[in-house]
Amino acid sequence: MSTAAFWGAIETGLLYGFLSLGVYLSFRILKFPDLTVDGSFPLGAAVAATLISAGLSPWLATGGALIAGSLAGLCTAVLSVYLNILNLLASILTMIALYSINLRIMGRPNLPLLNQPTVFDGLAILPSWAILLLALLAVKVAVDAFLTSDLGLAMRATGLNPVMANAQGVYTNNLILLGMALSNALAALSGAVFAQINGFADVTLGVGTVVAGLATVILGEAIFPNHTVRWATFAVIAGSILYRLAIALALNADFLGFRAQDLNLVTAILVVIALVLPNSKISTQRLLKR
Image 1 (tube, rainbow, N blue to C red):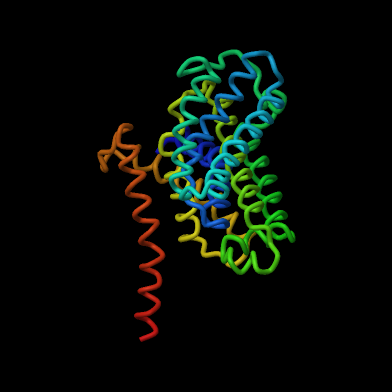
Image 2: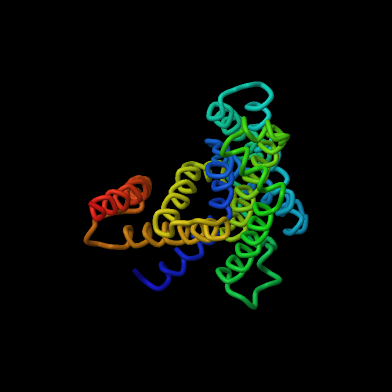
């Protein structure tokens, strides 16, 4: 793998780290199988690109993407909590609706950002991967602080045992709404940053993002078994970087024979490995005990 491909994989892993933290909040904290991120990721890209093209500050455009993503997560939560629609089905419905909404926002399937200002322009003294790393660490610290606060502990209790949490006076419905809003806001933030780094927003950007996000969470947990929230969020970020490095290595290794069109195949293989790895560790430990 070339040096350019290596640093490109690091940058992509950091970029999708925001998405992975969002997936961690929904899948691991709330135990909510959420496919909304397949729509909220391109939603963030669409909103940021449209607002920047209209002459708005890229910082305000990124903030607008965060708000749009949180609204998408709220929509899914409302369908599930108040209309009693199955979690997975509610997220699928929102994801499908977001495809049309993203087209409406951009006015076309693809919106370029050539020669447009971005949030990276004022920080040109640092390489883009370093800026992403600092921003991702700041978000990680914020997520850690939230999850270890009283409100965050109540949200974690909601995910573990909503009946017991409700019996203890926790407003579980409100916490599901909040958690889903935060999760998809992070996914939209990832999409907004993607559009500004790569110079375009496309309505198909979200295809497979939930699978990639879940794969990074599983891979990080398999390699870095966690016992605390701070370690868990670190594992998620590390998993995102390792996942992108593994894909880059597989696609650049000539002896494996993979090509660019095999990306989904490589993703599926990595997810299978990530799922099998923890079980193989448990089986090995049991055999050693015997």
